[in-house]
Length: 148
Length: 463
Image (tube, rainbow over all chains, first blue to last red):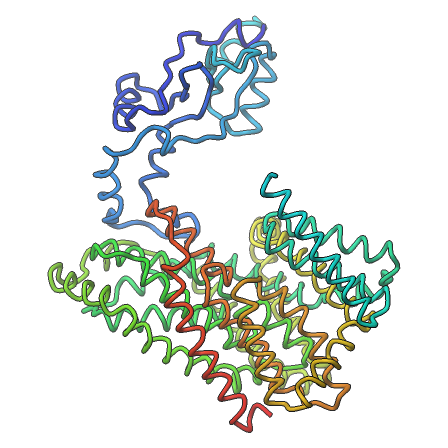
């Protein structure tokens, strides 16, 4: 079985110019943690997940400071949430996205996911256009189904 | 033409011209090659910061292939002792970070009660200088900037002036001890200076510079300070800041602090230990961080590999290693001796003139270049002055202070500046302009360098 045989084809993508707040609402409505960002030519330009949103909101230095715990929410977090309304998807999306080709074997997709610690992969065709998406759960199910 | 190609063209052209001029001025082919290659490394750091290690690799290989230096001497000049010292300190700093020491410092700053603008500026300046002198400028600035940003956010004021104040103090503090800046240990190692020499001669001068800096910034930033005073009056005491973060004061933090404290005390006493045990000069200084970090890796054996792989900046250290070897090649070929002779002749063998030349040249050079590159080039030249019977003592201090204080002049003058501005730009999504930094940096840089210049010329302790 190849990735194209089991991927989800109806990919909901976000436009890079879309408002970040709207994108957050889409994630909440679909009850998913992230979506690919796709431009007008159907090319993948980034990925927006809840991780990117949290990374934007939390102070950038927290990883470098070492071990501590927040007892209160920093004022800067509240300010950033207030100013979230002015942001576009392209302002906070991740630009380096790990992808898989539609003709890749399932194990190759699993391999890419494990090596890159990715939970889902956008699937690209030969013209580098987004044609689907696969998640870790989809790969596990498909591998077990194939071996059954 | 592509900008990168243009820069590369200039890099090669300038290096060739330097080598050609050297050969036309009576230097041998090997001396000219060593100068040309060193120029490539200097310009490589200036034009292609991210590729500096590539230039160092290729340049060093060319030195070997052209027989400008042999492998034995290259290894000897690579100053492995300095590199190992830095590795040991980086492991110790990694431990401190992991055990929450730096977050604990941030917490202490946030918990200061009845904060006033003057108290805030004094505390961030003193904390920046002390932490920098103890752990290195690049490490300390991250934590101080974290505290500054939280305080400025709480009082809703523009953080840039206060971040600049923290960086200025960090660079000044980095001159106070051997640990503050890689150039400190490099100069100590090459000049045979001890930690006690730094405590007696560098630290008091750094304290005077710090006080002068605080006075200057209180005037230069009077408007942002007035605004902060107003906001502090409006928003009252910093109750939320006091509770903002907590660091578990657990056993591991106390053990980490004890290991670091004992190491610092032993490093401070290294000269006496060396005399007591009949060790060669600076052996204990260089070995103590290795012993402590070795102990840390036994205590935390499961994370030992991570300390070495994650906390040691191998990219930077490899660059330093090859840079030191290239600077050593300048000495090996005799190029720096010729240069030293010409400088001494031009200065009329006057120590005050030479001290001024070294101090101002290194200060201005460090405002543009990485100070390690500059100091590595200057060391063999200063060693060359000895042949003319010059007493080198004040020149070493001039080089140290020039290299550290010059970093304050421009936005890119030191790694601490770049790190702090990087955090600020990412956090606030702003672009800090060259001139937003320049006037305060230039004023503090020039005034503090003048203070050092006068002290080096007037006070007999530096002779």
